[in-house]
Image (cartoon, rainbow, N blue to C red):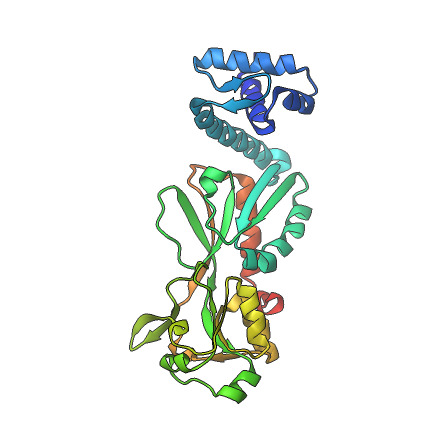
Length: 308
């Protein structure tokens, strides 16, 4: 029996959760899928699947082997696609994740064009503000904004710079005045992320040559807070206070005059927008093409102003 067919059948059964469902995809009888799994387990000398009349589950050995098999199948498909008709073609399924707000504005709108260029690909997009464990949750790539923690299991590539700045609506500044120094923020209505949100270090400024983090919510009076950055942005445009937002979110508002940038001379150095993926010897072709697609858009000088 073909070793590769055994491996492909094992991956399919694990993905579908049953022999019957996997057999329907293959167009064969469930008994055929069962024989392939039996032959694979016999050849390896380990049990990969625990099968009962009601459910199917992976053993510890099966879980570890599945990751290697998925990687092997992907690399083989990429190798074949790379030489097909002398052009780059990718197939299969791409699973990506991104922060909710950024993903709605700057990831989801780019998906249709990407799929139009690569007709053999399908894609799942997960938008979540939690830090997704892409290696263990089966994602091919994550888009992340801000400073990245060190990780031995992940690799990243920088797609664009991201700068954060204080902004306010002209109506608010006419009513409350314009702060000239970060310390003056404590006398203003500051629109801050609530304590359960991920922004815990405060607003960053370069003061006297050093980056300092201020938490204006600790002393500001009559403040509003919210766990959703989009709500803070909307409140800011409505003139309810000063917010600390990313340029990707407010660039168009600044250009249109709906918001005004404050304290620019104290702006901290930019951090980045990154594509992050599990450590692997060879990056799958579908991931490389996706990263190239993002970089091509994010690198255009007019991109952020036209889409924020």
